[in-house]
Length: 146
Image (tube, rainbow, N blue to C red; front, side):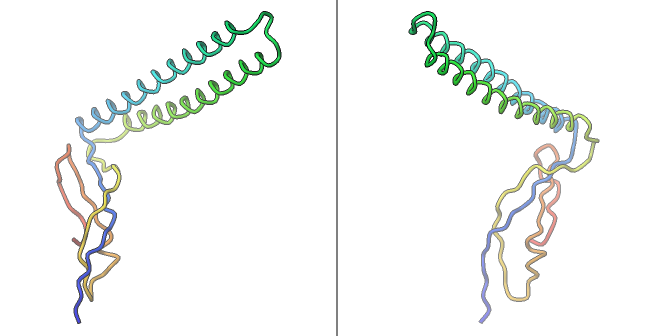
């Protein structure tokens, strides 16, 4: 009994570094940096507003409970700010790496799932190793055993 199976496999997507690819990658990374900068600014503003609201509603001088509330807000703001700054630093490193890539170098873009047929006698390892190479978004080469 000869059976044919249809299975799912990860397909690696690679891109050839071109001037256009570099420019688009840098624009995407810069947009992410700008988004994080906006989130940092918004976080700072929200933290200041929350603290000002607590101070406005409390008696002067503020009691230990109010001081604790303010410290908790500042701690939460600082923790979130630290997370956002870490993300920003990672993106800045990626941006720097993109600038140093050489033209025509191949870089990983990620993976997608693809379906494939498998029958008796096929080499499963070869069937699982498939790559698609893109140049400026256009398929230049499909590597592996389809």
